[in-house]
Image 1 (cartoon, rainbow, N blue to C red):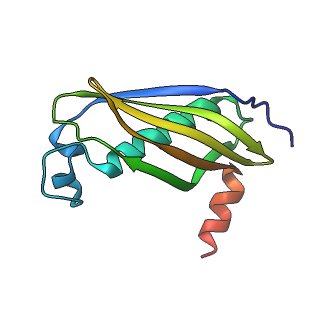
Image 2: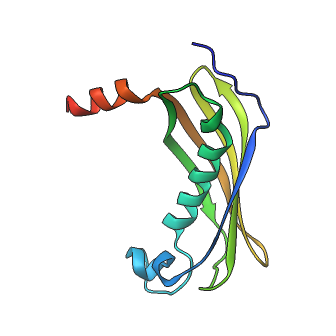
Length: 129
C-alpha cells in the first residue's frame, strides 16, 4: 500500500503547564516544573498530527523510538509548544525531528520514530498476547 506522505510535513502542539504536568505529579522528580514524560508526550503528539490525518482509513502511527533531551525547566502556568517535522521515510517507518519550547527558550530537542500500522490488524495481534 502506498502512503501519501512527504518529507517536510509538520505540526505543532501547544499547552499551558498545569500541576498535573509536573515532575512531582508524574513521580519523575519532586519539583513543580514541566515533566520530561509530558514533554515527550507533546512531541509525540505533534509527530502524530503531522502525518496521521493523511493516512488511509484504518491506518495510524505508533511511536517506536525516542532520542530526546530535556534542556530547560518550565514553570507551572507557562505555555509550551512542541514541533515535529517528518525528515525520513523508510517504508512504514517515519523519522521526525522534534523540538519543544516554552515562552522563553528551547526546552527540548531530538528525534522520534513512528511506524504506520493497520489498526484492526494491530489490535488483533495485540489481543493474541
